[in-house]
Image (spheres, rainbow, N blue to C red):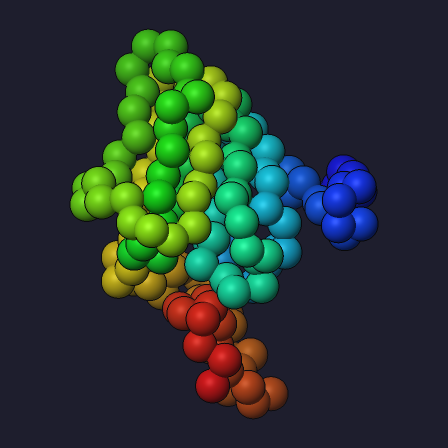
Length: 159
């Protein structure tokens, strides 16, 4: 993990690195407090849950280097997706079915997609995407044994 210090606020900003070569990597629930991400994938995929209230306020920047791969972003309904700085080689696109950018947090996508795609799941679809995963079932079993509240389905719920 790369750590840099900003001179304005003297807080520590980290860059989360995600590598998914020939496999699927899922980061769900409260998995990070970073606002900068580097995602590299070759013939694989990554799921990034960006709905957590533990991620500090402000823009999120995701540097993508995808080759015949995919990235699924789980975001809130009002999130703005900015894909202006993406470069496409071959077939590739950003799939955002609702396509409605809101007044909420801004996610800026930067980098290169070679025969790859970014899928944006918002609101209820993001919740369902998180719930239909092996990680969610494992978390439910752990919560049932130890007590507590599951965070993967809805990271905003602190129950």
